[in-house]
Length: 80
Length: 132
Image (cartoon, rainbow over all chains, first blue to last red; front, top):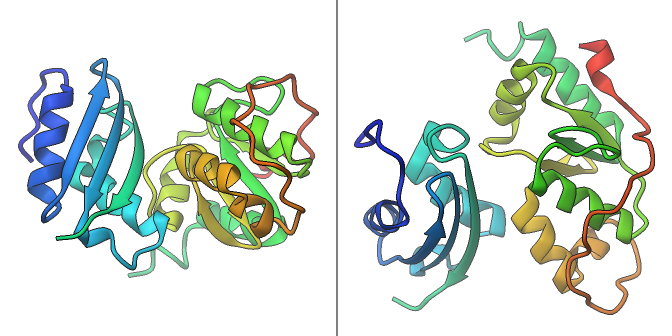
């Protein structure tokens, strides 16, 4: 895992989402503990909302709820 | 491995999900939510007039661990309807605003409104932590 002990930043989350989900673009805001991510990706096509959100949560694994205290997600399909 | 068959807490959580048509796992209680996301989800269910069972996961950290293993979902709250995982606060909010939540609950979808602010709640009809 690339996570360090340092506080998470919106920029870090954005980069990791975009690296972790092919073709994704993310807008992330947050205060180091609570974050909100708006994510668009072609990979969301045909997936349920739950499955879309899981793709985003899976980028961070066990860090969600721990180092990343809260992560709100809105997902949008985008064309490749 | 045997962890699914030999885990009483996971079985009790699974049973609670199956026995309650609408059940919310949350931080705190509907009367006293301990997290804004839980409070918002409670407020939505109350605003559509949906009775629901509620489980406070805070007294027993193992509930959260087992629940997330069942649902494959990392955050709290988690709403289940008819034994199916529906989502957390973000998804419930989106579904409420689009009317999908009311459909999933078998309610008439009223006019779409902004998500309601948390209000003082009715007592939870169920607290399974007493059994855990």
